[in-house]
Image (tube, rainbow, N blue to C red; front, side, top):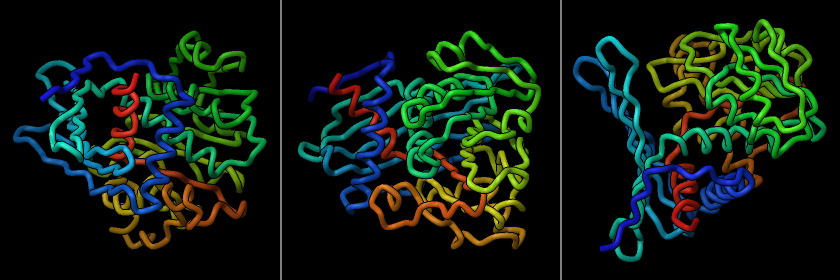
Length: 306
């Protein structure tokens, strides 16, 4: 048995990552992939382990990413992620990779794919809420799908590493602004890239046609937009069963009787495959991703061929 172990996640070309993620959702649309629900196992004393399984038949693999969240006394939590691919031909493992860095790439690529499918063709102004590696990766990937000419960044702390964002933005000017509301003012696309457990932006105040993406975290009921706002939005997600089960604002909105999961207008497989409708332009468009095993498989598959 030969298994390739990759400990250093390669900095893969964004165009290849986007193509691989799109292909995974196309396979899901054709019935050639399967996306089971993610499994969260709480740990005694705090923390959890999340498992992201997936099956992509054209790639010939079943895969699973395992991501522990381990609180540490007197310091930040320890977070790791490992993806394992199993051959559907031999039943043996073919790849094990450190997926922590790759998670940022697949998350940003998924958001960028949503922007490509949902945003106006001439979208030029990009707002980013968040200042960490995920936010910077979102800038890198969003630039692959729309000709942005203005990028604004806001953080909850007010600190923005402009040099780091400029490195991702190429020749597009990047500005640090004082608030999420200022960043979103007049923006065509707003990328929320925080670990917030409370709303970071009043999406209801945005003009119709604005696309807002959200990742948040898998902490219980974590959310970046007000659950009460969902009823007034055109809501899309990465995968209907997964997002409606895990996304905090969706869970809260359903629990409070403010919104129904049946109101999700489309997901990425449906949009890529053409079975779900695009935005009407009459409301703000909200896209929510929670992270999927088929995305992790797509990225790991690129590593195994690099």
